[in-house]
Image 1 (tube, helix red, strand yellow):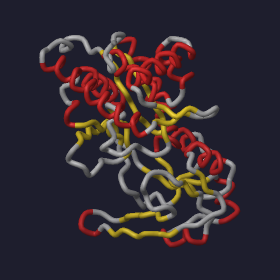
Image 2 (cartoon, helix red, strand yellow):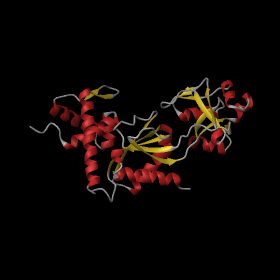
Image 3 (cartoon, helix red, strand yellow):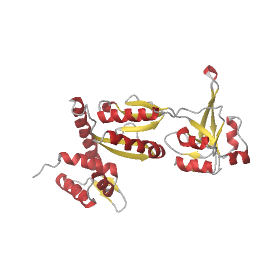
Image 4 (cartoon, rainbow, N blue to C red):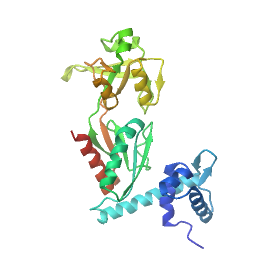
Length: 303
């Protein structure tokens, strides 16, 4: 009787769980969907338990599948760490690199960098997942997460990649119709476009002004007729003249430069939203992690 758990099954199941469906896993693995289904069925047959709940539209892990995945990822990580400590991959980064980033920033900035990164490090295999909300810092599903703002958690390493400000902005047409705010409290009389993302308090904008010890911060409770969890949609609404938006500078800089958006309350500044690469302490020796974080940091600092 063959062993219930075979080494090749660990990587296969980790990829399957990350992909979220049999067809997506097939694309990741470069095989057919029936082949993925057959491999999974053989695993379940050897184990004598069901690992995946299959429906016509989605796939979910059973409790046994969740435990299998937890152990599989830990074993794969330990193998990677052993290789790094033994110097097997010291000169050339290799292996699977799992990256998470937000939808807009990941699509416009991280994905193109990954394309360039793989030209330089062709032996690295990258899985990129974009999400509206960042995963928990304790989630083992990713090797590197690209985040805004330094996470207050000593269990992870947070390397600053690039500065990034949040700015208030609006279309000139909106300001012409409704007037330009002069002080933060004026925002309560305006239509403010809301974005529900992450764990930040929705609709509460914190604006600071002054310098040194004279800095004062005011929390303004905003309201408006438009809300979304997608930053690109919110920017488009602002461009269409529907209201005032608080958005990261990387996302609106081109519109500020061409005049389609105008900065509002430029004398005020908002909490920092610098770009960080966040990864667990145990990954600090991984050559593929070090290479990718260094590559992104160098790319962002290039003129």
